[in-house]
Length: 153
Image (cartoon, rainbow, N blue to C red; front, side, top):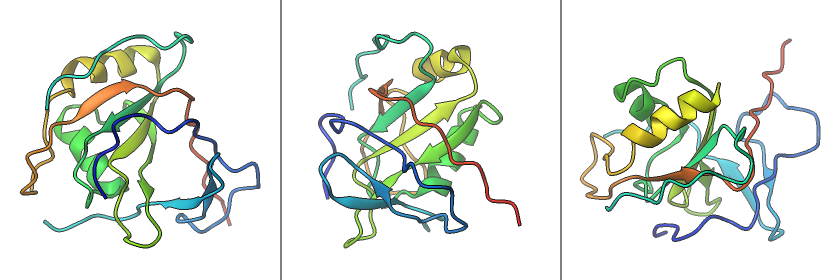
């Protein structure tokens, strides 16, 4: 598991109804199956910051992240950088075999302004609590990520 040099060809959410399982499998265009890295772990150069063709896209792709980071670690990273309350979803694709992320995570922000602010402050930063020297790269995701609604019992 190294870093992702480029975005996957497409990122799609399942069209099936939401399940109570937060690690539910999500289809990807390659036909492979993956799931979101849930939970929290224990303990570069700036990316090009260009606008996507759709200026209303509120999803960022954070790449070059340490491969042991999980969704909760990405949330903690966002909080450390003053982004609390500015996003509504995090998806960190995880390899089923290694249980490690694929070097990138998607974050959906509440508004374009929040996404733009994140693009100003996150590139070149590092995740705390790791020995990794990787610096985060940030760009607008090719496809918007829409978090699944939590299933209410």
